[in-house]
Length: 305
Image 1 (cartoon, rainbow, N blue to C red):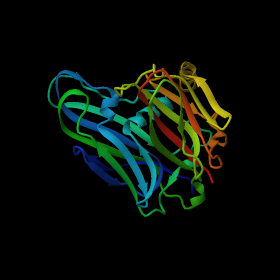
Image 2: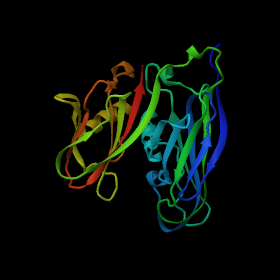
Image 3: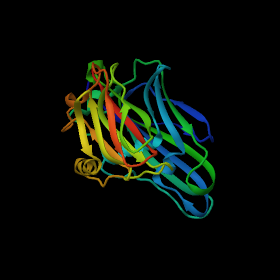
Image 4: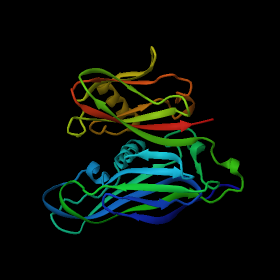
């Protein structure tokens, strides 16, 4: 029978300072999860909250299957990056800078299992019906922005974007959509090579990149060039400013400060993904303009058999 779309509310994950809190996700056919971070804060004079500091109230989210198979392991702020570019619109956040108690902060983000901006989004539709468990972990921090004197309450609301059960399992896509994160340290000026995982099931669609100075602040003044290569073969080799221009055309959005997106595919064709299963090495090569800083990368993998 055809798949029937629906949404459903899942029990929220409550804020507990500096603690890991978990929630079981229903074992259904999932297109994605709506994850809305909400907090009530007491703000003092000079309060400063940004999209990133709000997102960092959750240090990271992890989605684990069958108690051991990690599908998603990324900082919560990286999901903002994904949403910003994939939907060509900044998330509909509410950030209150009013100096008072009971101020509402809200960040609605979407974790997609289906392939956004692709020819066949359903390729990675997530069929959890045969799994023993699907668990979402939220790692809470204990602070939010500058001059927020207290976080009075908080929660992560969860909503499924799903399909009612299909009688035929073959109606569900056969590929897998994963997200992983690596932070690379900048240790000097000049060309720096960073290793990217290869072999195994590593098949890359995109890299979401954030460059930071030595204070951790996002900055466009960190790199002059970015490249991906294996041996003498360059898959990407582009000036940082030109990659910004490319991202502006690709996503119809003004690029975020410090942010870059490598898309190894064209026109949403996953057959063009960078398949690293047979590569002995894959190098992310950057040309640094600063002596210290970092390059944060969220890897989007689309795994076909």
